[in-house]
Every structure is written in structure tokens, then in C-alpha cells.
Image (cartoon, rainbow, N blue to C red):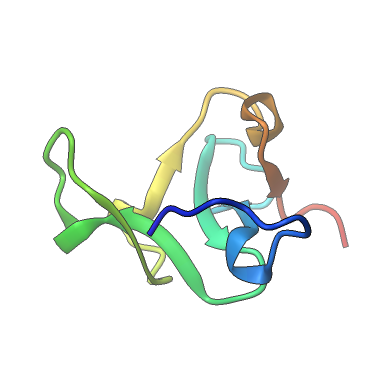
Length: 85
């Protein structure tokens, strides 16, 4: 559910792109809740154009993968590319 952000974003309002492979050489990412185990993916794993996005348990399957040209910061997101301790 979309809602207004609070002054200090609560944990459920913080999202991070996480690389599928360290360094994200292929540009494939998961969008994961910063402090939890929720990811963003299409409802009912639909691949149809315009499918509604929902939060779901991270299964790291193909319908939860996002292909980005460049690093997520280009789009204003934080990211974890798996190369920084």
C-alpha cells in the first residue's frame, strides 16, 4: 500500500536494490525492504504489462528481478551490490 512517508522513514518505508550477483555485472537486482525479508514483485507472479506490484516474501525468482541500466542510485535508490563489506 502506498502512503505518505513519515519524517524519519520507518523501516517498512526503506527499500534497497540488492544485486543478484556480486558487483551486478548483468544489471539484475531485487528490490528488498531495507530491514526485512520483503521484496517487490508482480501480484500472482504475473508477467503481463501493467501488473500490480505487491510486497511478498523474497524468493529471488525471476518475477522479483529488476534489470537496470546503470546503478540504482541513478534512479534515486540506495543499493547493495555485494562487493562492500
